Length: 295
Image: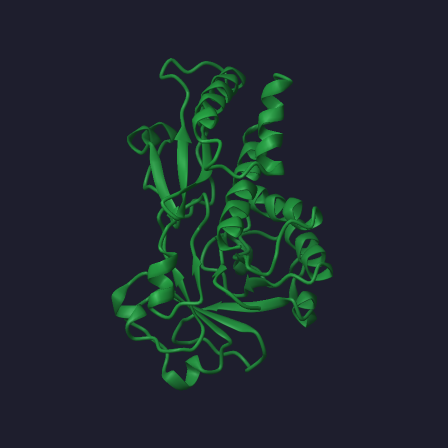
């Protein structure tokens, strides 16, 4: 592997896994994209994805001591992941905790998110890659030849309507800063943000979050329906019109990839595919946009 990389940290939600599955099976990804997956529940989607990515020769990090969700609560698994760690392309990821005890192995990744408990230099050197959270008390204290910068540019909102205060959000814009400070890649939480909620809340409002190139980085433009609302199918058609008008003036800033075209196709046939499909296509388009920038 060579060149600056993108290491999205995904919580293993179904639409995240389906986005990666779509991109992998269509042979659209390179090893510039190294997803880190934190399992949140015992489900068939992750083993299916790991098998697919291993067959494609693409690396995937699986966090073995997840900090969120219910996956780490039980010992018996219907869909065990342990056999996949024998594959060369499935790497072990670990959140650093003072009581962490693991055996040295190749291609292990350590994620550090607490400045109060930093590992000793001898421990750091046992890992292939170190992922450090955006905290000067961590980034300045951790010295390692392969560091990844983890940050969370996603807006802090509690309801979809609150995106109205953010017309655009910088998503992947700190590449040059990270390279200048010795990082080999950037990590973020993609289109989810760092806060995790095991069960969301029912919302009648949908939105589009579309990645595009701006000022040498990747930004997101947020599309919201009218305040008067309507059914989700009506909101979807309204957002389709807003997206198409925006695309007409940003045609040179957008990556016209398969996921974006599929999203537009649902508007052409006047079919609302459901919020999960919208999220899947949005995540896939965002990852491809970052990959295109890095290429």
